[in-house]
Image 1 (cartoon, one colour):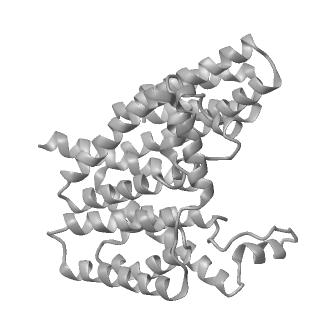
Image 2: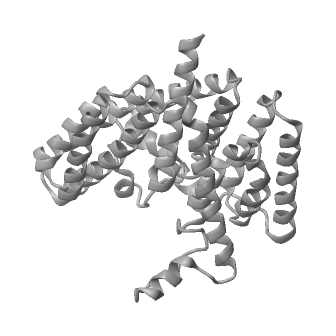
Length: 360
């Protein structure tokens, strides 16, 4: 209850700062973020969040010293980034406070959401788009959007399918796996398929105590999706855009290796909205400090995944590993739908492992 009373005014401050987007509200944004960092229990997440706050303050100082349109754009991007990041941190903190006995019910909610998105996608295959129909009923117009549920982008849709797929590795829910994997392969996205493969491989290696029927169904679902993919679609591969942006970042590394270019700066410096690699984008914007923090966080994730033994812990670890794999070729942490789901899952995973640590 005490945490809820603290988070509420912080949330209002972030909303106000995000709506105003000017130099006067930058101080409010930084203050709210510092207070929010106090409630973070995961040391790696807190360290990275505080480093983003430091960089945001530096960018604000540069704006004051060299006011021009260019520095103003950098400052505004940094403010937008910090508002979105702080929203994700609030979700992360809320997830760390959820009792572990409720995690199975939360899995059910995620599964229902994913099945709804798959249903919308199936309707779209027959030109029955629920969003288009709803817009027509109320007299609105919508531009043509890809067939990716309600998310509007097949990469976003595939990322969410892959990240939440381990939640279907449970009794009763596992019977929906053929649908999930079929829809995932129909998206033809490298990141989603690689992430799902990582999650399935980890689960099968760790789930020795689970029912053999579940494992058999997982294998059957994967084989079913693979056959459909091979029969009807070309081989997936990384596109030239990804390779070009990654090489461009590596080539320019000496220029930003120490402090980075600041939070939210890649759209200005890089000439594209995102890098299609969350790690490269974080390194580009946060420099060597971000590299060290994120590397340490990834090592802790792998360590905890290796030592998981319970079903809920293994499922959460599989979700997190799928997220890490998808971040190699996409930017799930920079998008609201997948980013907020990722923050929730990372918070739940932290709560699970810290609770088990207290009991042992």
